[in-house]
Length: 225
Image 1 (cartoon, rainbow, N blue to C red):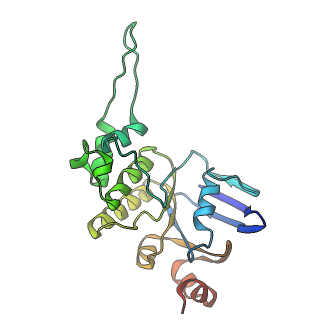
Image 2: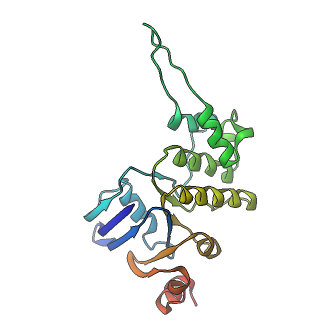
Image 3: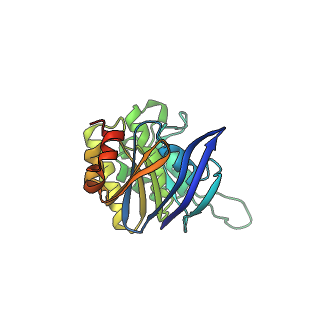
């Protein structure tokens, strides 16, 4: 469960996030939407410890996995090595230090994200969309009960989009609490149980997807209608 109470974050004299509270229960997907610059990524960076909060309470029992809006890979590492960073196991054998790497779990994750055929490919050879998939793989490799996905569909081909949707659904079915930042309203409508709308760092709508998207203030601020 992700439990957030009265989170505020300022940069200088500007409040990027102001008094945000929400609950994301196990087995649910909470959409976090809003116009560019509304504070979505800043909020997630605060919740995941990338930025210090000014005030408020964050409770994320059991840890979390996350992805980032800006894709980052280690270009000279293989795709498999990216996942092994999260899954490798070391064992001590006899009186000598010997490291045994079990790549089975990592290869299963590559299969889930659709990168099995690229296991030995260096990350620099992947397309922009493909580079998002090792990051998603690293997140789910944590086995955490909570996830923050920051625009995971941006730049993906339709086949990749469907694969990532299925991964998110699978994690939800496993009982994970998932916060999803996304601009595509069709994806939000398809995946999310509830949504929160931010505008200038303030929550202007929260609840069931269609009810919130029909709110006049949300339409004006986000949909531009």
